[in-house]
Length: 498
Image: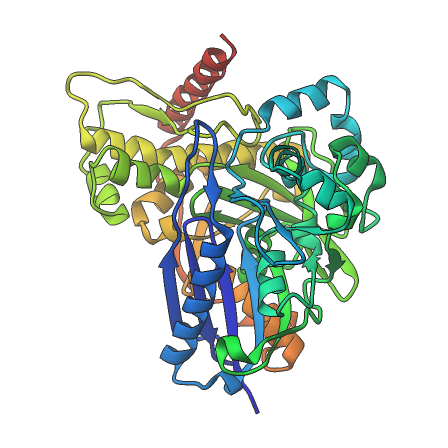
């Protein structure tokens, strides 16, 4: 009987694949970076064929390194960078343009016009989202309007839209299945998260023809079968969720009031609110945490666009560090008397500010400021932005009062970062033994559906703590540091408006 589970984790900077055993051990891994394309200021693109190529290559590598044969894989689960938009021709299977990445801001003006027309209250009431270039709807419209012949082809039913999960599913099944799951659909700004359907009024407002849209299924659904020629066997695809929702499940945040934050390219915090969709009064997002067997569970979400990407900037842009680990070592050596603040708004500010025009800035520089202080300021920015989110969540819902934050993502390997977060939040932070929580969530969805992994309660019982970080900073220092951050953000917002 097949027992392994393959998780495809297609992210913003790399494609990864992991094979999990029934004991939830990672027994095989494959990873390849994908190229980032920046054709203009604020524009971020991926080659969808590059995404596909690296996904297949890493899946093959993971299976090979696991020591299993493809026929030993019981199921595939897919998790993905959300909102990133691919449009392809159904007749050829080829994308009509590079994918527009979630970070892409080219539709800022289109969002402004829709806001001026009064669309945002309706949008928020139906989707839980805000009018922002972050989401897929205006990206779809841009592609249809800016690629020659695209809108005519779309109206004729020749084009298909999908987020990355949907694109991979189409290719894995040889073009047989055009479907997505509820968590990814919920990030398009076209999906009513209360009715569980595409919304005709929003489709009209964003000028997106219904015929380009995929079918929406549960996260633990039958999504088809991967062609045997691709991986060495015909493997059922039984799980799918956007990366942040997959990490929520991977962290076993199944009870209302449980919260996780993932520190990857960006930072994304989700607070499980159960069967109740909490409408935010503080510009957070109301979203679907997961949909299992027809039952939706909701979450409040705060989205930060730049977290780990700021460390990449230190490495690749400023050439101050060779790796993220070096950034933490530098930060520990920083001069404690210098109060340097970096606001990494390289592609705008996310929650709770939602300012698409803001750009990054540094404050408090002196002649004595050097790489150490900049490294500390970049890492501390992740902590300050997390507090922005948690404070907003606490104002929205009383269930956050005694929240313990479970964390994952590349940045959480740094003890410095997690201690900074605990200090800034004045709350405990828990790092699990298995840091591959996004892939783990996708694996659990597929593995449980296939009958090789336990149910929700059994899976939650398998979660294990690596280390718990508790606050050390005194309240006076904490308040002063956060006040500096707030002044810096205010200045960035003011500069963007000038």
